Image (tube, rainbow, N blue to C red; front, side):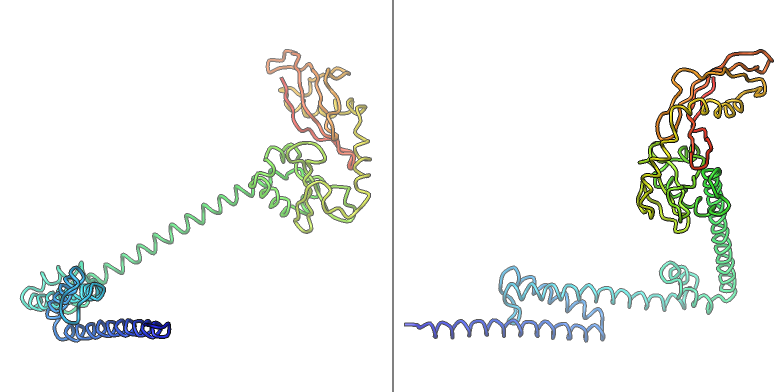
Length: 362
């Protein structure tokens, strides 16, 4: 009766035997590869025939489990088939290369033109070397042609690069002009022109603000909320305090609302500022917008406005006033006609100025 120790010994012997068989199979495959390599060095055709024979024998062993003494077993046969098959392919290519070289050597002597014509599409570098020996005059012409082609390609590349650079310069100039248009009415423009333009272009590009909003706000407005910093603001997405976008001109930082304030009483200052924008300033708003109405007329100097603004005029919030009114002015034929207008105008208490935001004249 077998004991557990005997079973362990038997199992160990079986595992050891399998490992040895595996190592022997690997060694045999390696030896087969070395032998085929030596045959390949001596004769590619002989190596091709030998590899093909071993591959066939390995295929038979893989299918039937039988075969030559050292190729018995499906796994071993399949391994031999794969290795020998790959080697047969390599040997076949080497044999074809040998045959081609032999034929080219004969053709070089018998018909140099045919030899060069066959060599050209296969190996340009070798063709050029052979051309220099067999046809020196054609070789000189070919070298000159290639040099002229390289110069033409270099000139074309330089032309394309210059055209692309010109396009980039033109695009940059257009972008710069557009950015300058956006900030044309900004406070302290000469001092902060570069940062104003850069940030405005970035805000429009990433769709935080629109070009129309910059035009309506007339650029960046100096903020009195930040007493010791050069901070400017504009309105993006609306006309309330929450829509304010602040720019620190010294650092280029952009932030919303009251973020980054260094003065804790700034909220109170905002309240004080908004307290100056009451409905009582509607009359002043009506008077201040008239200058922009005149600029929209054919004969500005003939315009006459009633002393009272039209219905609907009043404070719309955040120091923005809606203004409706009418006027009498001459048209292009000199006749006095009555027109109407409607628009919005913003009051800036911190500098005591007005700015028209929108205007429609009929």
